[in-house]
Length: 390
Image 1 (cartoon, rainbow, N blue to C red):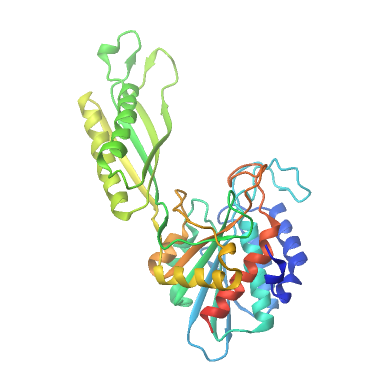
Image 2 (cartoon, one colour):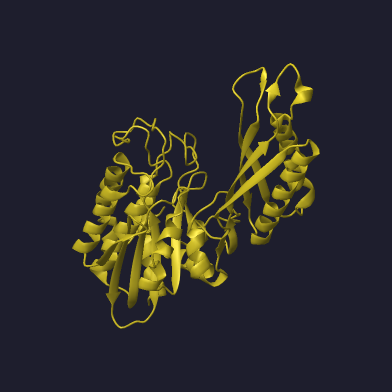
C-alpha cells in the first residue's frame, strides 16, 4: 500500500495502534466476557471527547461524537471478542490466556476503529453525529442482535452503518465490496432420532437409530443436488453424530448436529422446510421418530446497494482501482452484522490480510492479524466518515 495515501495524523498513530492491537491480542476475552477490552475502549473514547455508553449487549461499548450542526448520523462497528482456540503462533504478544485466542482479527478491527476515532476527534473534519459501535460476542453468540434488543438504534439512530473484516487470501490492505447478498446465513439443526434399543446380536427386535441417521445423512445431500436451483448456494454439513456407548448395544436414540447455510433468505427458508420433512420421513420409513430442533441463528448478510456503492467510491477515489479487490464474490461464512443491516441500510466490506505463503485462514491457531492493515483500515474509516458526514 502506498504510504503516501495515509493521512499524516493517522500515520503518526501507527506505532500506538500496533501496541494497542498487541495488548488486546495478548489478553483475549470470549463472548460477553470483554470487560478489560471494554474498559480499554471506553477509557480511550472518553479521553478523546466521546460520550460513552456501556452495558448495551452486556459488554458492548458505544462512543458518540457530534460535530457541527449536521443532521446525518453514521454508525461504524468493530467486534471485540476472541475464540476458544489455543494459540500456536509463538509471537511475543501471543495470547497469555490458555485456550483463548484472537484468531479472527477482532483485535485488529478494534484497534483500527479506535485509531480512526482518535483522528476524527482531533481533526473534527465532519459535520454530524458519529456513532462508534464496539460489539461483543460476534463469534456465534449474536452480540449484534443483543445490542439491538437493548435499544442500539433507538438510543443511537443511524442513517447508515458499516463494518469491516480482515480476510486472509487477499492482498494486504486492498478493499472488497459487493452489493446484495455477501455472506451466508448460518443455522444449527439438531435432529434426535428415537428408535428402540436392543442387543446387537438380535437387531430384528430393535429399531436402530444409527442406521436411520446414516440414511438421513445420505438423503440430506439430495436436497442440495435436487431441490435447490443449481445457481443458488446451499450447504448442509453434518458435523456430528452421537449415539451409543458399546459395540454390541443398539441405542435407543441418536443425535445429529448440522450446520446449514444459504445466500438467499428464500433458500434459507426452503432448506428448513425440506430438512425437517426429510428427516421425519426417513425415520418413519424405519419405524423410528425424528425430532428436529431447527435453530435459526445468523441471517443472510445483505449489503444495501447504494451504501455499498458509496463505500466503494470512497476507496476508489482514495486509492484508485489498484486499491480494490476485483470481482469480489460472496463469502460462505456468516456474520451477525447481518442483524444490523436488517434494521439499517449499510454495508459490510473486507480488507485483505495478505495472500502470501505462510499465511492462514481465520479461526486457525496459527493466524495473526496483519499489522500492515492497521493504518490503511483506520484511514478508510476516517475517509468514509468525512464523506458520509460531509
